[in-house]
Length: 344
Image (cartoon, rainbow, N blue to C red; front, side, top):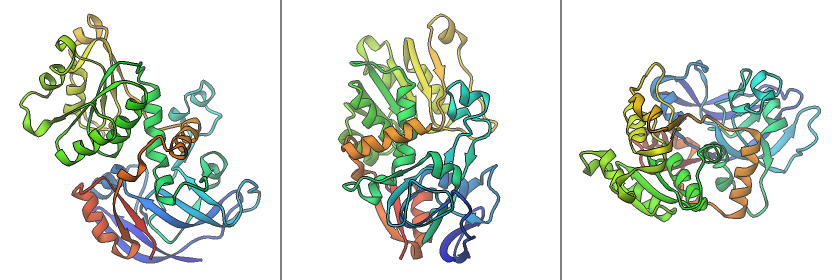
């Protein structure tokens, strides 16, 4: 079967072309793509590549669709069902999976491509664990937010946030905005910090109690700390940018005994410097949280279905697949929040 698809051939080289899809293997599902969203990982892959994916391959990985065919052995899904799938599945056999840390699976099945097309094949491991039916009242576009939301549900649950805490979220891109929403739902006071006023306005609409335009302050740490009681610092800092210098800023904003969640992924090989006194004498906890687990995928879909998240503010632009070059330009220049790509 042939499909039109946006194929990444190399750095900054995406081409719309016709691709032959292989016959379905046992356990696989083919869907007609209904909505596919851009994300920060797509931007990184386009600009600097990805160590696990060698071009050419079909671009995009946040998507929803209608099942058109199922492979041998598939029982939970049938043609006509509306589904959302994420981009990985754990092995459930390695040490990390067995101790309940599936996001660290050493045999993780990772499929970071295939969504910017008319049709896509969901691999068997993802069909078995991380593909879910979309509730009837949820739109394809809303459900396409499943994967990034699952990551953030994981991040919030690992951050130790309590009712009445003060939490700073540094970065108001899609991930930071999801953090704003979920931290607000946790009953904490949220401070949103970013360089773009338009994104801070969205953060405010999603529950941020205060916003800080970092482009207008000379000392980000002081600007954040002065918004806490007695200037003591935040209970929890969440870094959602992925730059070493911003990691260091996040750590420096935390009160004694607080937590810094360094959620944004930095480029390989980068390093940070931390004052040892913060960790020892101030008992600051510094942690990273990565990816998601099947449990958090289910929780994320529940949040979308319950209307707990204002999903409509996240998708700010929409392009047909035939205009993929324009969509990529918006993505690279960080115009809007997320862009929806729809087959023509």
